Length: 294
Image (cartoon, helix red, strand yellow):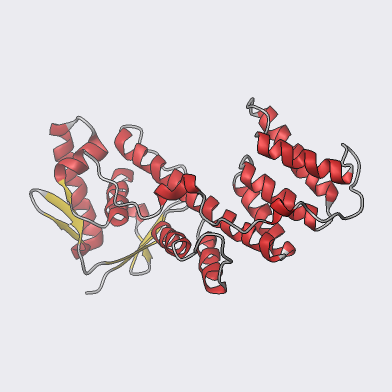
């Protein structure tokens, strides 16, 4: 029999086997075990799984792992492979997971972009497809209070997925800015800022797009919105680069609180630099291997 496991892990999780929901049929820790095996797609020692899900409770954990594997096998059948030493999903069990597809779509396509070049339509479509898979943080509101190693892994994957989203948004938005596709760029920039309201790269890109589109009041609004959010969060003022960009725009247009902008002025040439596509600070996200638990 052919097995098809599908995992929707971005947002509220959902697991289906051959089209039927199964996550409601298993305890949370059993679901966590299945999710981890599917995400990692490799063989794990039983000791690794014990540490991941039961910490230092080696004696009771061993019993609990055997019970979990028995329950899991009753649900997924031959999709599960286990020996006295190891646990994995069977090689012929087809696994689809939204977070893995998103990662592949974004990482593989960003690797195709040469520095300071325009993104091809094919790469743009692939990046947009990846963005559309995101419906919330990885395993949103999924908690295992007595499994700190598992929750640390979940947090790491949440951060990774969020960083990949920022990478894709940044590359697409700045590509639109460079090509003069202002309406598309503004739509992407607004989604980017909604995704991460304190991402100052998003704020700067959106300010540049609004400026070039002669929407001066929105330039002021997005900058002041950032200031208000930072003040509400008790954080420092906007970064120097963000403040300097707004100050330059304000001096060109006479932007003052409560006023609309003036006539259109061509932006400074440095605001039209070629998109760099992949920020150097995020290079470690490209091509990482699997995450192990020691």
